[in-house]
Image (cartoon, rainbow, N blue to C red; front, side, top):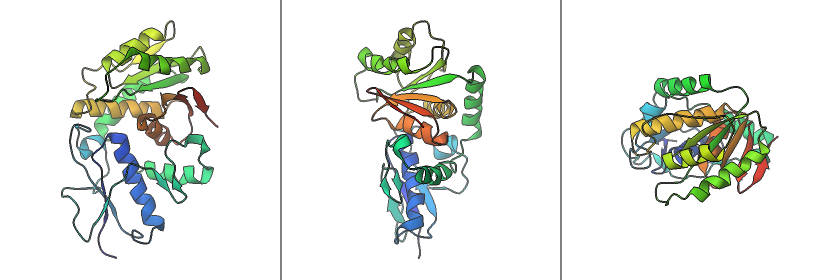
Length: 249
């Protein structure tokens, strides 16, 4: 069969990663896609202000032009498996599906610059640390009440754990740090966390990769940012989801 499967997604970083992984899944079982190479068309826009190569080290993955026949445009934010979509399933997903998808997520190696930022952050964190990944989304009016939903999850985190706070709003990060009280906290002290800039996206991806290395992740119930951190870490971490629920082994 001629052509390639080209992932095309104009939404944020995590949705793009889900789309690329799903494209690989389809090439293993969907008749129309079986045996085709997977590529990505990566628009730089307000949702992701960095190019593919600025974030990833996957040579030959990106195409520079919008897909034309015989290429197949693949456009979905859903995370697909052979058994159907598994979005936000976490540890409810079967071990077999988790193993298969984890191998696909591993294809997306971070760029050297992003890896360096991740490693410098990890050097500051003790082994017993928890990631609090706060996403307020650019079109929402930030409210401090959003943060209390996240910090309420700390009741399920051991007292001796350091809290790594990541957010797309400086106000949210500052509020969360204050609400953590006497807890040890670490934040990524950067000048830019805006997703519409290359610098902001590299910082955000580095923080997501830090969370991937930690044993506990706190995130929002409809946020793909903690979801992809969990997958990039091998789908092993305990996940605390706002509103309060616990998903672990």
